[in-house]
Image (tube, rainbow, N blue to C red; front, side, top):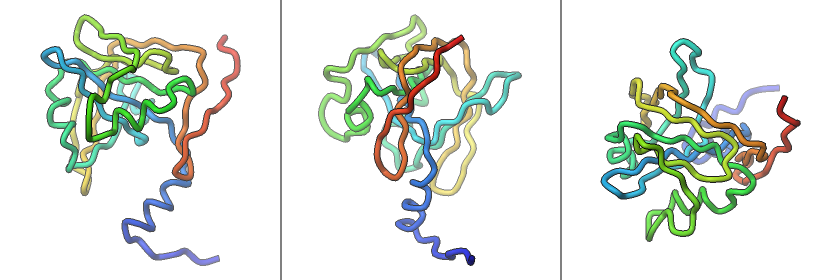
Length: 166
């Protein structure tokens, strides 16, 4: 079997869609305004000492330059109960948090209720990577729920059943 050598952006988007990934909302409250982005590139377990996670964001993002000024950023790994949240927060129009049940930490991290996992983070480092920035985030606290995670695969959202937590 030979490899397909087509690497144009449209082909790559279809190829990368074959890798299932969790969907995370990265949010904060800045000067009383809720700000956030969604990422299917979110990765846990980058490092245990210090506790680091990461995600990638397009350099063309209009939201990241605002969000990167937050002292703390809430990472909410979305669950099957968060249907529609991803599209709403990623929207370029209107109140992106209207009707979304959220919680803010004392440090300004903003979390989406009924998510699978919450991580309170701060920026550890930013690395340029082509047309994206790779953002390393230090974890300061967490909360786990028993909700099934929402995954993105083949350009669609699915839920993944979770075994009982021990």
